[in-house]
Amino acid sequence: MRMTYRRTADRRPVETLVERDDGVVFAMRGAGGGAGLPHDLVHAVVETELQVRDGVWGCAADGVVWGSMRHVSGRRPPHAAERSARLKRERTAAVQRAELVADVAARLARGAEVLPSQLAALDVPPARLEAAVAALRIAAERWAELTPGEDHVVEWLPAPRRRAVPAGRRR
Image 1 (cartoon, helix red, strand yellow):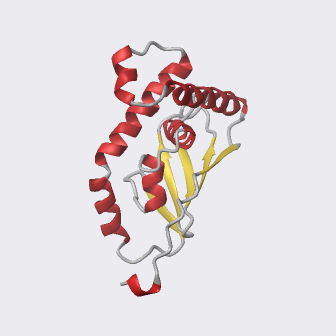
Image 2 (spheres, one colour; image 1 turned 60 degrees about the vertical axis):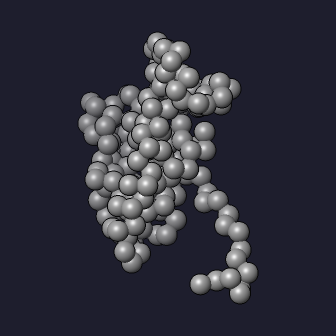
């Protein structure tokens, strides 16, 4: 999956082009813009760095359509709405955890204070969290260098390989 974030001016909402691996394309409107790193881009950087496959972007890659997403092109798979709703229900806790991890990493990247209890609640090894914070700082620098109308592209983690099922065991 590829996400293309277009830099806007004056904190206008950011519209992200989301191109899923199945060929379906969505536009997603999100908070942020101007020189500040958009919230959805924070998620993409942190979830990619930490390989969080069931967070906001992992869910989108697997077929979740968030309320801020608008279909642009591509044929949606059969029963896409039902699959999206089921995945949202099943992954509620994981998405909430991804929100917490992204929030804490973003605050650390900005140099803001984070309580030890908040760090402990993440259950992320310190070295991995430091790597995510460093990646956020680099992304923030790159984002700030863009002029309005320029794009920042993020390639999402490839789907994990599924183990082949022997022919006699297929349904």
